[in-house]
Amino acid sequence: MQSSTLQKPDHAEFTSRKFFRSLDGIRCLSIIAVVWHHTYLGQPLIPALGRGYLGVDMFFILSGFLIVTLLLREKDKTGGISLWRFYMRRGLRIFPLYYGLLLVLGLILLFVAPNSDMAKPFFNDLPFYLTHTSNWRHNATILAVTWSLATEEQFYFVWSLVEKFITKTSVLFTVIFIAIGINQLVNFRLLDTQLYN
Image (cartoon, rainbow, N blue to C red; front, top):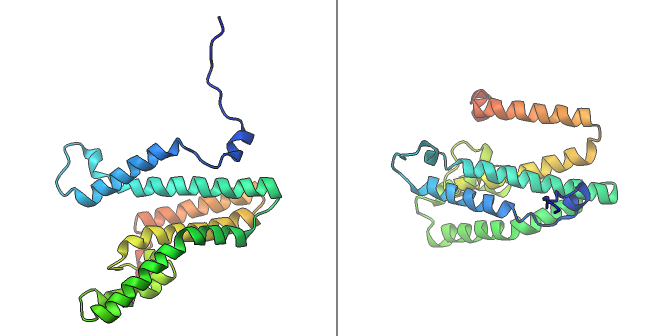
């Protein structure tokens, strides 16, 4: 009697995949965690339920995994990375809806509700929203939630350059370790004076 074994995908099959359906469940749990975090106000009986914000971190991990997979797939297939095509694909997925929202909100606050409490903070923060740098704005207001989108856009821009131009593995690992180090300095608020003054 033959024993059936689970077949693990080889590298070629992995890099040829366009969709990773197994990640949909993780996305679902991450969405639930973020919604929970923004709606639940009480003290959770289970401490882990007070960590819903980690759903955003999981989205960052998934996004990083998928974007790097796309870049490596293109590099394996063509021998290089077309930054123009990469940026166009990312832009067409996000920019129309995002800039459409900014335009509609800007028109409403300019012509319909110019004296509202939201108008002045929105227009003060608009340069940061337009340039996807609202995550560097310490007191971003109306669209403060765009910090996560800004973070992703910056990752797309920077990491595509890293994948295109850094070919030595040792240099790549050095860049990764430096990025992790800076990230931890920011996480532990050790760079607050430099970033927010």
